[in-house]
Image (tube, rainbow, N blue to C red):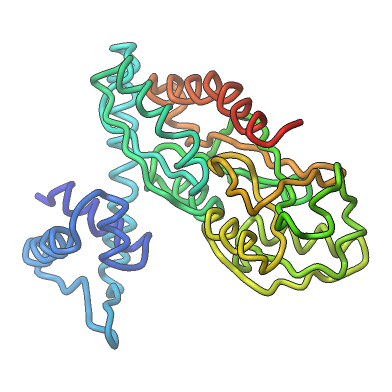
Length: 309
């Protein structure tokens, strides 16, 4: 009989594209995942992983088995949902994928609150880009995703995935304190054509919003520095190397060299919780979404107070 834990490891490698990424998603070490795959190979008498340059790749037989594993894991999830629903209390493991600034500014309080109220719930967090996390939910790799989108770039929910709004996160234009715009109460987008920008890398939600929005005003933004972390962007602004549009969530207090200026109209990104339709009845999902929605106004108010109206 095939071991479900080993099938889960193989499925994670297939979804994430490598042993290391699969280990991070499962909360294991890479060697533990490799051992699980090795045992599965011996059980099935089938080669599942092959060397490819410096990395590995799955064989055709491995992809077939991973597809079977995905269907089995869906059945297990359905059984777990029914059992948890009958008990009526959040319990068991809940895997959550969340983008970086929410993982820093929202999830610590949410996870602490869930732990306090529901000691039988084992919630586990992984930082994942929104573009990837929604697909991970749809494929059953994670139970819940906290993602975000912007007004001109909505994040679609694939079939079989439901979502709820957590709240809206405001964004500020950050400039060096000696920048000509530092003394302004507000700036319009048309005034930023000659600026040097600091942004997230191409392919991220924030980068796509920035380029698409500024193009509508008639110019292509000159992006001179790229950094995934908002704190890195703030440090680059503090060094006088450019301006940046940075959300308030998870940003913390600004250094004295950096000034926040209102961009008119003010950019806002919306936070969503997303889960599979089949897991909608699970008390752990409902309680986690409720907790996120309840905590959001207070978290957003702290970010607003640090920046001003």
